[in-house]
Image (cartoon, rainbow, N blue to C red; front, top):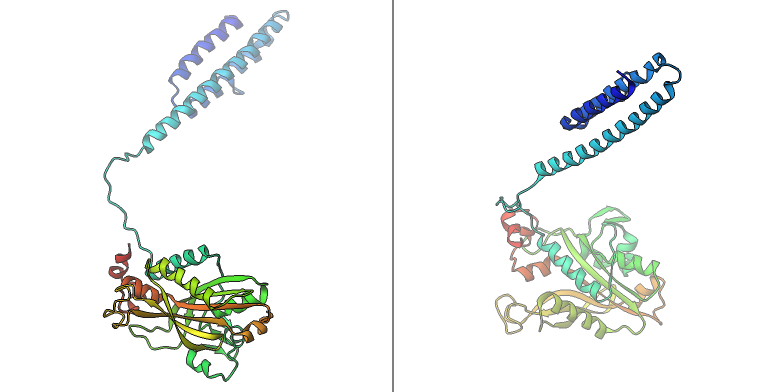
Length: 342
């Protein structure tokens, strides 16, 4: 049998074998059998020594053309098999999206986190920046830069957890206000949310660990009207239209003048009810104008700049917002309680 006839026979056999090849492994076996070092086309090439010298060039050309053709046939079939394998894999992985399934149990956002997120959204919408800082704080930032020097009676009122004489668990998030004033130039407009610590008895309205959000604005010509306008915007955002503020004189070492801030009772809208004890108001937060001594200690010229600060207890806001009577419910992790906020 001549070279041309042998190549034709190998071509027909390859067509038959590749037609039945269903995977790339089988196709690779066909390639090795035909084109490998010990393959039939390679053996045909080696047998050219038996041909007459004048026949060898034509035979070699035929064998090389056959090798290129067979290689192309295998590559084409390999691509077809790859596409088919991909289609089969997709068929196996197909999901019936119309099939009813049991819905997974999804957790709910904690009421404190709900309130915090909403308050952050409210104040960032008013141009405030969010700052966070360490919960284990230096006495210098927690007290001294807030105009509360050592032996000041206000330190007793804070019921502080001391790590040592100079390190405390922060009693408020005001240290971040001090850090902001020390590292930034006015205008400054920041809120500082976070966990704080005070040595307090645990009951329905008190906890040694709770959450605060404090705000600070430093700029030229800032006054109490700016503070009230900011807190009115906050009150309406959290409790709805018609909720406003009432200021009552108070004292805080880091603000002068200082004020306790009441909000219109969101339950009765000022008419008087059991929740507000008939007054129409509920005490919610404290604030005031930043004490000039605090500004000077933080390197800000109090003759040029003024500012206001406020502090809000997040648990207090959450309890009023959701009608929670006992603060301890928010810390116990009872899924029956938390499930109500899903």
